[in-house]
Figure 1 (tube, protein in one colour):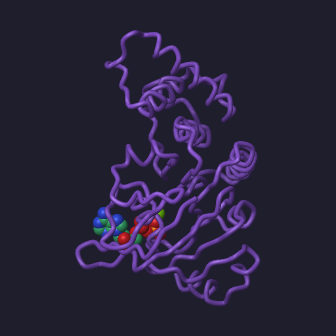
Figure 2 (cartoon, helix red, strand yellow):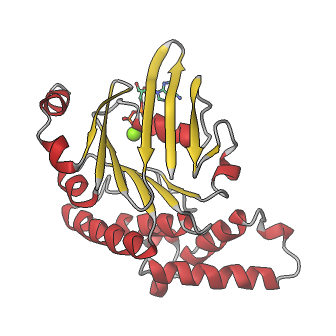
Length: 245
Ligand code: ADP
Ligand code: MG
């Protein structure tokens, strides 16, 4: 589904990614873990075309997408939801998701004539909100929602283009313990149900072990270990890297 080969990225001489290679198999839930500053978000930014790598390549379903602009990447089967929710807080939940649907089609509201296309997009947005369990809150302002629900709106927006691969950067960050459990169940049920492939980062070890089929450990811009959750849990180098944080 996703193949990353020898990706390097530095910022003003600081090497954030130092030859990272990674394969995400179709249908898997793949966790990317590592201490703060390991390079996880930087790698996501390279995958979605926000950063151009200094070297290496990114392949999505076999196609080299390295250097593609983000809007093109997200129209090629990849959905993204990053740490900071992307919803416009003053707009309604439905309007946010509708705009994501329109953006996915390469349209903005102002470019819409006739209005029928807008109604179509709204219907699709309602369907997406149903999937994430927020149909009843569609008319509310996004700012009225608790963070856990806002993250679901974000995921609904990420699903607007019917991606086959979804990238979630710390989906549980900022959530209470209770909200975290709800979110883990939500991710499991929804994304497994849709048959999506997932690449995610997360600091909550319990959640990682529950969700992931495969774990890659990143440390100082390099892959330190990769394996099944059981292997990673018992890997002395991994434990050391985390305790050394
Ligand atoms: P993680 O997500 O694993 O916590 P990041 O990928 O955010 O780590 O950061 C990895 C390193 O790269 C950090 O030292 C960070 O300061 C640096 N970095 C990330 N983005 C930039 C940038 N745009 N400019 C300069 N340094 C950056
Ligand atoms: Mg990060």
